[in-house]
Image (cartoon, rainbow, N blue to C red; front, side):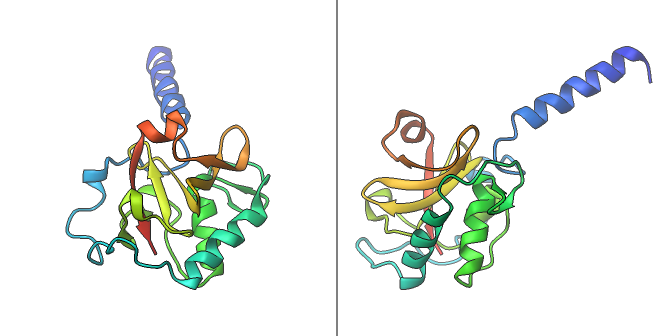
Length: 165
């Protein structure tokens, strides 16, 4: 391989790594895997299960945990790693990938969010767990696991959808 090709390959790899965000794959919502959702959409006002409320509560125990790309333990989380770790602790197995997590559960309109719903942003490259009152918990770089508001500009403009597991 020539030096120019090697540099081009290295640059492309760095660009892919830098742009990866917290998800291991980048898919637009329409590319989430096709077909109908696993379950029909949630009726407005349907209560969240106690399991989902427990997931929201459990997630707050990891506030301040560091961000680690591909991390899925209290030693370090990325966004989808936090979601999959917390849900595994309440008995739900989902992939460690935001775009693939979007395939699971029931679609929830933004106005019907309940604690424990998984919220998705930025073409399915980021997600977190809804806590209630417009707040959600997520793992972000920099900052690690923290709470943010859905109405913050970055999240408001990059909203994709939500799922109830």
